[in-house]
Amino acid sequence: MSNLNKQAPDNHPTRHFRSLDIEKIRADFPILAQKVNGHELIYFDNAATSQKPLSVIKAVDTYYQSSNSNVHRGAHYLSDQATQQFEQARQKVQAYINAANREEVIWTRGTTEAINLVAQTWGRQNIKADDEIILSSLEHHSNIVPWQMLAEEKKAHIRVINIDADGQLDLSHFESLLCDKTKLVSVGHVSNALGVTNPIQDIIKLAHQQGAKVLIDGAQAMAHSSVDVQQLDCDFYAFSGHKMFAPMGIGVLYGKSELLNSMPPWQGGGEMIEKVSFDKTTFNQIPYKFEAGTPNVSGAIGIATAIDYLAQFNSDDIAAYEQQLLNYATQALLKIEGLVIEGNCPNKVAVISFNIVGCHGQDLGMLLDQQGVALRTGHHCAMPLMQCLGINGTVRVSFSFYNNQQEIDQFVQALIKAKSMLV
Amino acid sequence: MIQTTEIIETLSFFDCWEDRYRYMIELGKELPAMDNDLKTQDKLVPGCQSRVWIDWKNINGLLHFEVDSDALIVKGLLALVMAAYQDKSANDIIEFDIQNYFEQLDLIKHLSPTRGNGLQAMIGKIQGAARQMLD
Image 1 (cartoon, rainbow over the protein chains, first blue to last red):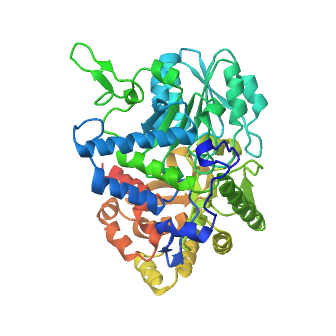
Image 2: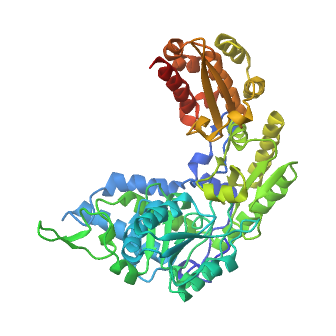
Image 3: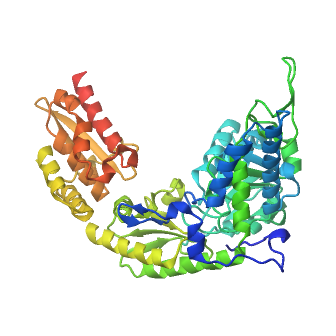
């Protein structure tokens, strides 16, 4: 959790935080207490999706048991309840990311939909032939393909920031790519495949000096750090609930209000309109202009509850603990002969991507699964990055603050056993 | 060439996952490697996490397959599949009850086609070859 810009309400000097008692924290996540293939579950696939605390599960359950109704519609008690909770959730997110106002928080299905929304609205309105969009070699396919589709339609061009051998973005290369054709820079806050934290503050500043807009894909950052979008001064910030202890199917697009106001709507339907007739339809204000159809109300409540859950803790404590896990696991793994860590740079969240000489990642993954270890193998939806690193894929472990050193010890033993079976 | 009945029998004999997987890995290692020149893009089976190549030719009315994978356990899976399909007629391949075979092999957890191991895609490619031969 390197980029800490926690805003005042949750970080008041006199505020009393819950201590980081990992055993008690583990008890908040019911899914962790189970056996998989006869072994205690070791869940190290947090970058794919995080587990959910009981408070989030209960909040979703309570919504359906007591408040379920369509929002912004009915003139009845339940609809009013649902609408209030839904809009309070938006305010909770606004405060958490320190957006200037609540209208800047657009609900989406997740990061992918948020990026597609920007590509299909701002992008189609502003990108012209020969314009350039800058991405990086580290990007997840969700932050590549929407821009490729747009570039193809508009005859625009994609430019890609190089990385060094440790997976760090080459800032001087980025500067050399910036030119008057650059209209947008879209980069990840944290790499999903390697865990590398990118210098987004510098990237945003440099892009703005060139007059380009900046979208930050925050999918992998939100579970590890709090974000202040005003301090960052990014134009868009996209993230998913499910990677930050909230349910699947809910995400957020933050956008500066002047940009969101200038953008045309994307999906048409209910809620996003002001007035509909067959002659002419006028559109609603932001955020509703971009929220066609019945929204994921329980998901929004879930994300607000996840924020409440996280706010109990001092984010510095979580960051320090995760770094401790990262260092401990890195040291232990490097003792295994033939093990190579990809992206071994200092500025990382608690993610380790590695290969073992002579072992295929999928084989390791299967043999680890037999021993109760859940992790991810393959290209991690970052095929261009794998090409760049000259590999087919990696084995990736990604930690959360409910993981502990004992799990790392067991995982390392399981990995040594898997390796011995293969070579 | 190892028979399906022998594989089912051997796997049912083991009582721990390690032995079953060691056996799968052995089966994979014993499977003749495919000539590197044959491993072209068009032989790759899409939908597999590891690279899986399947090539086939018609030898006296029987389908002869050349298969390989860069992952050992997946190569073991290929050996299981080959035990059922190697040097069989197109009709035999289409009629073989692969579902029942896998149910009998249930001792290996990864045999479920939903596990992303590419098994479904491999079988699809083999059955496709058989159908192509009948056309």
